[in-house]
Image (cartoon, one colour):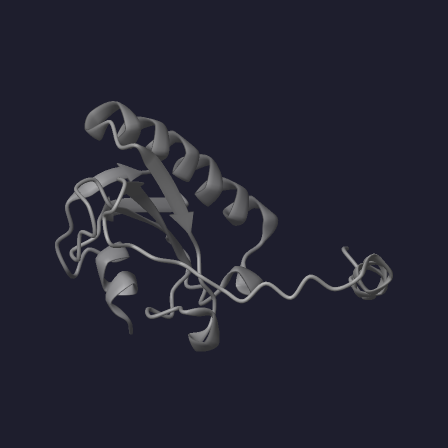
Length: 133
């Protein structure tokens, strides 16, 4: 059992920000900036690939509400919403969650990736491979 499952079950205390029947939001113990909140689903789901649509919707609606509350409470210059899946995708806790991260200029947080810029025909071919159900 991972740390977020234990928090959801009440086995580990957390500084709760929000809770409903599908979502628990709490302060990240490793605050990058003041107001850094974890928004986690209550059901056992490792990644976004494991969520049903209702749970996914509930988590993202909660995240939007929490982002507005963080903006009001901390007045950051920006907010990053981060959600990672699997180790190669930077996920460190195997339980679906996202971060509501208040941001400030020069706060030391970085996110970079190499831009590939394929030609438009290749973009169309890549899009054709994706079948949304």
